Structure formats: structure tokens, C-alpha cells
Amino acid sequence: MNEKFCARYGPWALVAGASAGLGAEFARQLAARGLDLLLVARRGEQLERLAEEIRSEFGTEVRFASLDLAIPQLSDELRKLTAGIEIGLVVYNAAFSTIGPFMEQKLDDKLRILDVNCRGPLVVAHELGRAMLDRGRGGILIMSSLAGFQGSPWVATYAASKAYDTVLAEGLWAEFREHGVDVLACCAGATRTPNFEQSQPRGGPKPMEPRDVVAEALAALGRRPSLVAGRFNRIACFVMGRLLPRRSAIRMIGASTRSMYRANRPPR
Ligand SMILES: NC(=O)c1ccc[n+]([C@@H]2O[C@H](COP(=O)([O-])OP(=O)(O)OC[C@H]3O[C@@H](n4cnc5c(N)ncnc54)[C@H](OP(=O)(O)O)[C@@H]3O)[C@@H](O)[C@H]2O)c1
Image 1 (tube, helix red, strand yellow):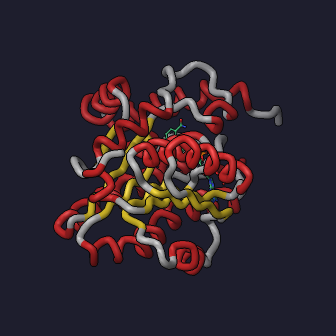
Image 2 (cartoon, helix red, strand yellow):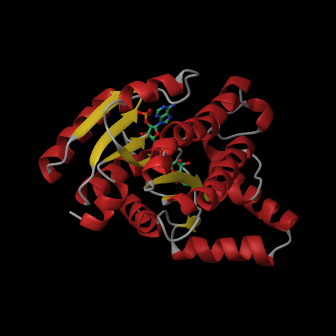
């Protein structure tokens, strides 16, 4: 139990995209600090299991709801789910991505990336941010990615969506901090989540563990507008963003993305 953290970000935290990976780890670490949780994702059974685990381990209250964050009526659903509870912290963790040449990806999938990764955090910040501003305290943490620091072939839409996430959070950080509300973009690199492992990357940097990314993100909330998680990732970002010409950075990232995922693509 962390009383200072609860006073600033309690009593309830909404974790959007909580059923696996980093989202489930956010839920555990927030409960360990003493927050009650509202968990959402599409897979209700996973959420139910996680809720039971957290209740028995940490004794906090946990509610969950199966919700697709890409739906057009997200605002209405959020209002229903959060009616009567005070959400002091939002973690928007959910994301959707596809890998492969732009023209081989369905337009519907590319639009879904925008819905889940961009429209979702925008709606959540709009719907839940107002009450935080009125109260003069709270926090919004948006999971972003190193992919958002430059364009990359094969993940052009995902990378652009993550640039949006980082820049949205940074703008809100500057606007909301005057009102006592902390906003943070956590830009993760490769992290050992089920989703990352299912994508079966070949080679590439050693992935971080979700618990380390989440611990760094929660420690950085209220201290800065954005965070690159992991020392290796911070060095890589410095080299790519500050030392290399932009076209070289895009080429390097592109070559690495293609080599990590080429072998996994079905033959055409
Ligand atoms: N893992 C990495 O290597 C890595 C690297 C950089 C950045 N990140 C960022 O970190 C975050 C988490 O990544 P992750 O690897 O843990 O897993 P993920 O597969 O990206 O998804 C995480 C969660 O989002 C939920 N979700 C996905 N689409 C949803 C939707 N339409 N509606 C509701 N929930 C949805 C999933 O649950 P359901 O399937 O049950 O809905 C799951 O609980 C993402 O924002 C990602 O961009 C990850």
C-alpha cells in the first residue's frame, strides 16, 4: 500500500487493455500500491481470472468488463462503466497492430489500428480527464512505443499511431499539469508479452520484462511528459533520433523490422 500514490491517483484506476501482457502487469502493480481496479479488454474470461488473482493477493476491489475499445459508442460505454466510481488514474494500454507491406494489409485492419490506438485514448482522456481536472488531481498514462519515433516499412500505420499516442500525451502533460493532473507517454521497446511472443520475431534486441517496463512507467508518472523504458532503449533512441540523419534511422529500423518478421510471413 502506497498512501501517497493512492491519495494522488486513487481510489480507482481504469486499465484499458488489461487481459494480458503489460496491461495485466499494470493491474497487479497498481493493486499492490492500493488502488481499486476497473479492468477492460475484449476477453472477459482472462479478466475474470486476473480479477480473482488480484483480489486474493492484494485485497483490493476489482471490477471488470468485456469491452471492445474500437467501437464508435465508446464514450457511452465508458460513462456507464464508470458511473458512481471515482477514476483517479487511467492506463490506456490496448493496441492493435499488423505487420507486412502496406498494400498487403486490409484497409479495415489499418482503420482498426487508428480506432484502438488513437481514437481510444483520445475518447478515454476526454471522458475521464474532465473529472480529474475538476478534482485537481489524477493521472493518465498512455502506452506508446519506440516505433513512434520514426516511420518504418511494414508497420507504417502502427508506427504512425504510436507517434500520435506520444504526442497526444505530451500535449496533455503540458495542459493538465497546471490543474494537478499528471500525463505520461511510456514508450516501450520490445517487451516479452504474449502478443510480442506470438509475433515470433527473429533476432532483434533482448526484450524487457513487463514488470520492469511497468515499474519504470509508474515511477515516471508525474515527473516527465514521456519516458523511454529501459537503458538500452534510451541509448538506441538517442543514436537514432539525435546522431543519425532521419533517412538513415528510417532505413535502419526498416531493415531490422523486415529481418525480424520476414520469415514469419506466409508465402504468396
Ligand atoms: N510488447 C511489446 O514488445 C511492445 C513494444 C512497444 C510498445 N508496446 C505497447 O504496449 C502496449 C501493450 O502491448 P502488449 O504487447 O502487452 O499487448 P497487446 O496485444 O498490444 O494488447 C494488450 C491488451 O490490449 C487489449 N486489446 C487489444 N485490442 C483491444 C480492443 N479492441 N478492445 C479492448 N482491448 C483490446 C488486449 O486484450 P483483448 O485481446 O482481451 O481485448 C490486451 O489485454 C501496447 O500499447 C503496445 O503498443 C508493446
